[in-house]
Length: 224
Image (cartoon, rainbow, N blue to C red; front, top):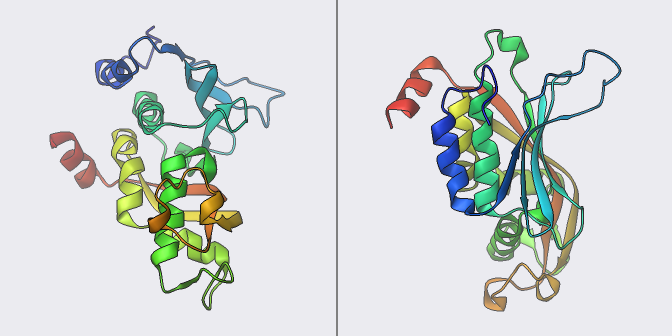
């Protein structure tokens, strides 16, 4: 389905969706309501599979993006392919002519909804001398700061920055709150027990802080 103002780059986006095979794809590029919707989000893209809906939403008043999975149960989580396809839709929105209209953050929600990231956080902390796996807390720093530092590493952010680059965005920071810790043996997303022992962080509410790419960086991305 093609919507006025969003045809540019549609073929590239469709290629990303092709990985889902028969996956039902719903695209909603509706105009933001003019009144009475201060906290409503518009759905940019929704992917439906296995009785789960994975969505990219936008709050244009507060200039924020959000990834959301419904229903909010342990049976419905994000896959790496679904996240890449959803974020590819950011490029379809076009670059705002006014920098003040650019999105400033992407809310991921709970990290446990991204099993590969939750597992990576747990196993990294378990091997880190800066984490006390006996007490289940970082050494000499607040836990939110510690988890943010692990998630802001280039090897983690590269997964998100690649699709966001098409929309002219980059990740400038990661903020977290409500970090949860648990015993490695109790975490279903950690498959290899030898990679993780003790009590480690595995879940948190996560925000990616977004910035605009410079024109030179955007030209380089397009050439690649």
